[in-house]
Length: 169
Image (cartoon, rainbow, N blue to C red; front, top):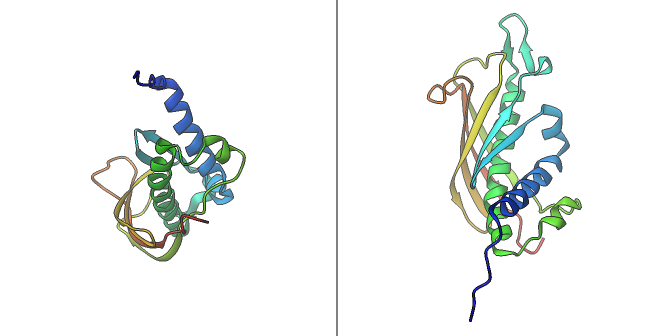
């Protein structure tokens, strides 16, 4: 019995990119902040391009703490959702067409989110990457770090706990 031929790499990449785009564009606040995601395989890096509206203290100037915290929380939620969505897309349980039609999966809900501001965020692009420490059926724990010029010098980090949506929702 012959095995089915695997899909071309470009088709797989386009499907993954379309799913990520639908997930990110489905949240208006992500669009407002201008947060984008760069995907390398199943790993995501969030990018928050600098914009004057993100400045909290014009005398320094420094990024607003609320914008920084939102950036970290967005990175955590999208990273956590992408991990679950990745498995479902790859297994065929979720069709990308469903996502692009606006029927997005439910996102995790924040239980608590603790931000550590390590230094002032400068008026330039910021990057963040989330690491899922634990992810079960009902609960997940995520650690996220944000940096600007040097990944080994984060300007903020956070730990969040999330209530995962039920699979049948």
